[in-house]
Length: 289
Image (cartoon, rainbow, N blue to C red; front, side):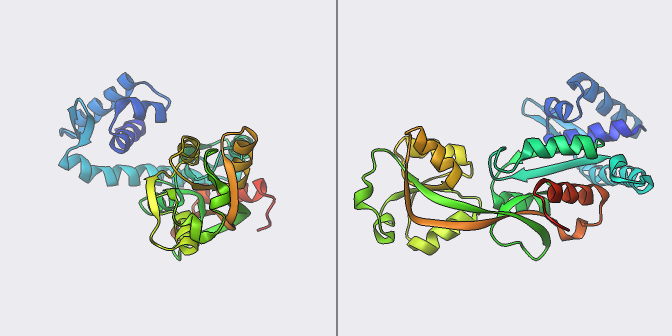
C-alpha cells in the first residue's frame, strides 16, 4: 500500500469527484482512478459506488476513511516533528475567507508562505464567517477570517477593525429613508448562513425585517443592490468603489465598525502547520506575538 493511494482515496472521498480530487492533488483523473482501483484490489473491497453524479463512499469505505486520514496525518506529523525550522514543515492549510483578496492581503500571504514555508500549500475557500466556524469544527477547514465574537473553542488574532456601511440602488430616494425607523421598512438583502452582519442589522432595525434575498457573497449582494432588489451591508471600501463607479449610493445611517479575526480551533494550536500559519498571519499584519 502506497501513501499516494491513500491520498487519492481521501481526496476522492472528500470531493466525491475524480476531476476535483485530481485538481487538489495536481494529478489527472485517470491517475487518481488507477490509485483507487489498486487500493480496492489490495483491500479486496469496494470503497466507492460510482454513478453519473460522482463517487460515494461505500459503508466499508466510510469505515476506512478515518483510518486513512489518520495514517496520512501521522506521516506528516512524523516529518514535521523532525523539522528543525518552519522552512521544513510540510502540509496543507485550508483557509476560509469572508472578504476580498485585496482586503485580507491573500496574495501577499501566498508569497510569504512560498518564501518562508514552501512545504505548506494554501487552499482558499470564499464563504461567510458562520460557515467558516462550522467547517473548522468539522475539520473541513484549518482556519480562517471571521467577523463577530470568537467562540470559546477557538483562538484568534484580531487583524483589523472593519467599517461597514449600507448601500442602496441609484433609484432609491435616500431623502425618504434616513432614519432607522424608515430603513426598517425597506427591503433588505441579508447574509444568511449565520453572519454577524445580520445580527447587527436586527439589533439596529428590529427582528421584523423584510428580507427579500440572502447571500453570503459580498459581490453577489452588490450586484443585487445595483439591480434594485433592496439595501444591504457591505464593507466601506467596496461601497466607495461602487459609488465612484456610479452603480450604488451609500447610506451612512447604520454605519458600524466590527473586528476582523483570524481564528483556528483551540484544540489544534500546537500542530506545526497551524503554528506556522499563525506566525505568517502575525507577520502579514505586523502584529506582535
